Image (cartoon, rainbow, N blue to C red; front, side, top):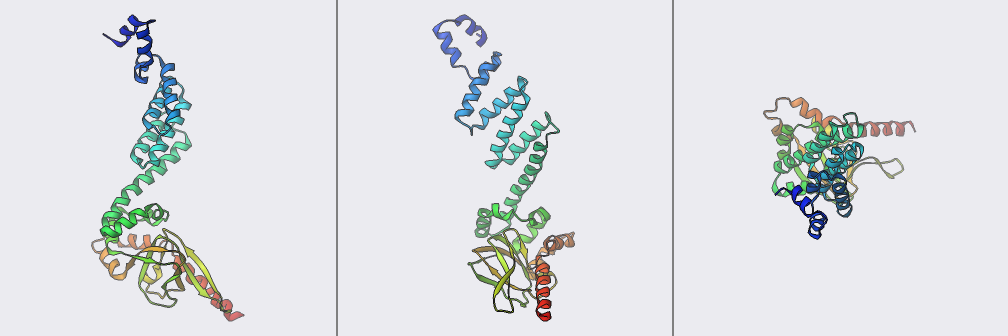
Length: 291
């Protein structure tokens, strides 16, 4: 017997009332009782705000009954929940679905761009972890949310990451530990995975000052590695710091078979942090002479 026919036979009776009260939102929708289904779903998401499934059904129902603005808001809440839980593919698919209804919504376009980036970074995370030793991969994996703050991951292709990461070494520094001295030739660059490294100089009066500090995701040492120039200042870790180091041997290995070596090199040189530090040091030297 069909559900609708059964309800008609029991309507008004105790059994009929109980059965009606026990109906799921799906049953109510099938019966065309949209307001009852809406009330049930709204109560469910009120009690369980993180119930993505129920909220998605609520969004679908709101769209079905023509309440599009409210539906879009619910879809976005579900997408936010998926994104927060790390399900970037689901979040992106939902945004793409809603975009068909409101293609000009700037929030959706911005969210789509962000999720595209997050999907790529989530994929790259596994690439990075798999390219390192087990111990290094576990450590970098734990620091991933900090590591992605820099721009280098956006400049390197997946293939370039697979080439260069196995040739980098993980190093850790305690707070106030010197990484390299001024004027030293050490042909390597450091990719800061966590922490901070400051370029430090001694002023004529004997005091010490930091010309510039470099944060998680930044690179230092591009002049040393690619131009074989001495380091322009003392580089010191201001906090507990973790870096991935690429030296000349590692660079040579990374470039073997690389179809576009200039692209890989320029990706590491793009920010030219050491060049900026060297310029500042030179300017200070000139001022010192003039005084």
